[in-house]
Image 1 (cartoon, rainbow, N blue to C red):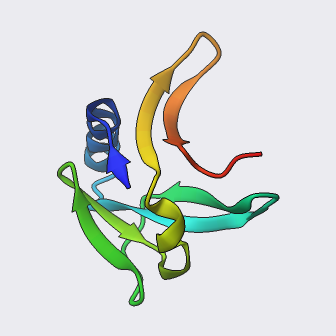
Image 2 (cartoon, rainbow, N blue to C red):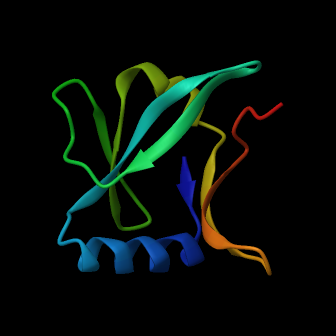
Image 3 (cartoon, helix red, strand yellow):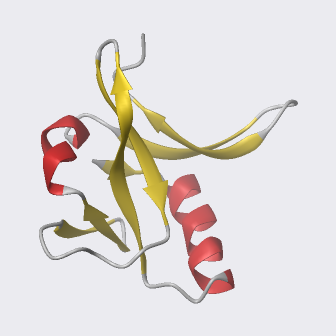
Length: 92
């Protein structure tokens, strides 16, 4: 998993606003091409893999670790919305 600089700036703001230390990548349901990933401001669970990525503490739920290898967390802003996106996730 990678985090872009734009994603890092957005996450840093969230962490400061919510007085949290990191983010957690979790299983958010099954899709046609594999698991869907979700994000939360949560403390790591005992079986999570914890990494520092671009200065951000990231806890990854153990069962989704293999599905995060080619994923980039980015901040995108469009006319319709803005927020964090997982680029490279198995979306059908």
